[in-house]
Length: 295
Image (cartoon, rainbow, N blue to C red; front, side, top):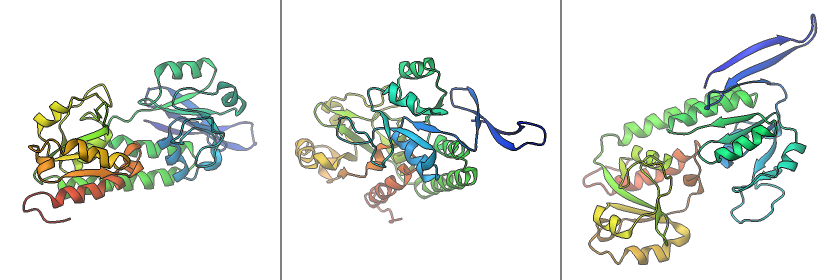
């Protein structure tokens, strides 16, 4: 993303307003008045990032982030809800008169983006193919939030943490893992998923390759044949998952008791706090490497 700050004079001798021209990840150019931008976020992790940058007062609407489905007027952070995972309340959205609607390409259908644009809204698209993209997003969101210094500081801190994990575990013996998203039917994450990239920093490799489907359906027999060192599953399904996998006594993960229940919600959000959530898993994996020292 390329950022260009322009100063525009509205009248000779009159007040100077800061106008900002920003290019989103779809290659579209937008110019905003940076002093009074009204924003809507249609991705929970983008909402988190904007609030973390001090832009809560500029957020006029967000996507519903409640775990339970239903009509929620306010998000968990107390902001007006204009959409959920399946639809947008167009009437409420238009009533809020946003200057920009921020969407996450991987989580927002192209048809929904096109519909928002037909309504005359400026739709700013973020794409997250690599962990490094999160640092760039912090910088551009800092610009949109009127907090460029905070955006740069948080982006620099994220890059530093990324490099630190690579340095700590990059030369360690690799461990393989299977990450269970859902048990019945069995769903996982593909090898190019952001969480897979984060675990790769720990020296761990997904038994599934990268692919176009974020959460592919997997046959249990495939996992047994791949024989991973570790199996991850959700803490909310821990008892049933342990019982399910413990049947396969020949697998390394079962034999070595490397069945791990994870419960940190940040692991499911593609934001910068993903690295903070994965660090305890890095330490746990390190303890299971033969002859490795704890870091």
